[in-house]
Amino acid sequence: MSGPTLRRETLLVLALSLGASAVSSLISFTGSLTEPGGLADQAAQLNSSQAPDRPWLDLAWQLFGIATALVPVALVAHLLAREGAGGLRAVGLDLRRPGFDLGRGTGVAAVIGGTGLLLYLGAQAAGFSLTVVPENLPEVWWKIPVLIASAVQNSVVEEVIVLGYLLRRLDQSGWTPLAALAASAGLRGSYHLYQGIGGFIGNMVMGVLFVLLYRRWGRIGPLVAAHALIDIVAFVGYALLAGKVSWLPTA
Image (cartoon, rainbow, N blue to C red):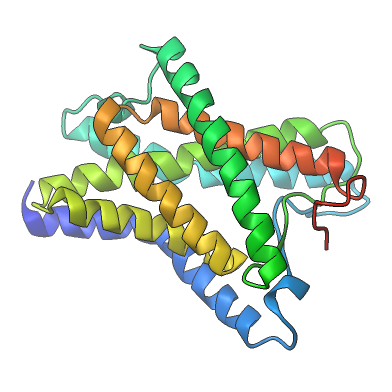
């Protein structure tokens, strides 16, 4: 595949996924900065109800959102398969090494999850981050399963695109490893900018670590597992603890 074709393909995939999220996040952050009051007085809502007081319709919207968010992953799998790379197996997302993926992922999640929580609490207290509300769903039977599904969807989309796909295409385009690392980590930070400066910096640092681990292991499987576990703890933990402990900021 020629260089111009690689660049066009990469830009199109990003425009349909995390690149668009980065632009949206920048616009959202600009709005937050120009809003009266500090960042800590504003909230970034995740996993919100789409049809309050209509649980079955709300469930349909939640599942629709999760399914459509995974379409760019299907596109990447198709593009990798078309070049003869074996689809997502080319970036290490398969069931060949489940023990390795889950074990390494759990370790990474334990380190990053705890550090990330402390960074968020510090940034929020200092006024550099919005108050992140991980979920605002009604108390219905499907709440926890949907939060878990949302966490898994986030992890698959982000790691397939910002790690596996983007790094592969940048390598094929002749980028140096350092430049590719900067691009991947910078993109990860940018689409979290809606959370404030703390979210941007924290996720960019996480992006650097994830790139280094991916280069070392040659698989995104452990990092998908780590990301999913971090988000599951954040989403479900907030659902269980919000308003019940004093140290957890709420909107």
